[in-house]
Image (tube, rainbow, N blue to C red; front, side, top):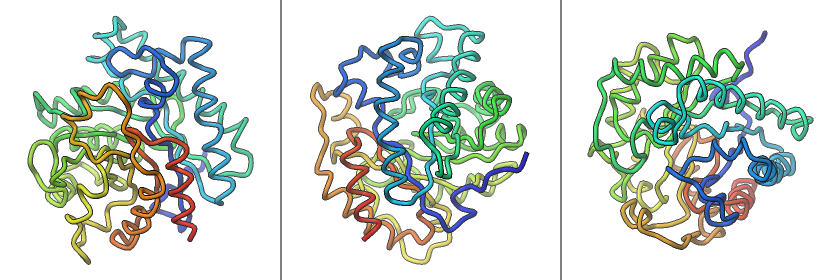
Length: 310
């Protein structure tokens, strides 16, 4: 089977989704222990909500003539978080495989005429805001290899590790993906100072992963930070900025500590956020994948598309 071209291999722009978990929690009112979305796919109302969420994103991609990076709802479907929720490895293997099947079904049913990439989503072993413990590269390779192997067997086009907080875990994911023979993307969480939660600059993190991984990731992304937090850390003409192909920004300017304490959703200003993506495109010459993270929804995606089209 011919491998589909990824965003960095084509001139096409790609849309991806937004703050799926915050939408489910704050907009739909679902109970989400451990902030995990994957258990909802086992419930009829959960499956209906997933379709309600993704169908307008297909419509946005079609309206704006973009491709679509379609994520699986598996950010928390890894062994440690699964154990917290009472799920063993056999159950998690089925969950990850079913998520790929569901994404393929949506591509078939809603994606006619669109270039849709099925993206197996990997979350961090720990908290996406606070790396309390850091694995070695070898530990991360073994840990995330479980989920990656299921994705590959299920037929994903790519895998992406989102909200990664530290360099060794990123390298481990990249090595596991290389061993499995699937393209991978690393997306780093950034703090309000534009650095990783472990303190490294984004430039150092990208450079180290590229230098030390068995095979370089296909590209890098930024997520779970507001553009104001990192735009000033993007120097012109630096080689490492050319490795950033996607951004999924937060709607809120709050710090991660502040967001953790929020009982109401800070959804920011969709129009303002859309305009900031246009500015980011001037700073990042290879930026082609546009989506959102905490607090964003279809309104933000619509404004992002409007700004990019302009």
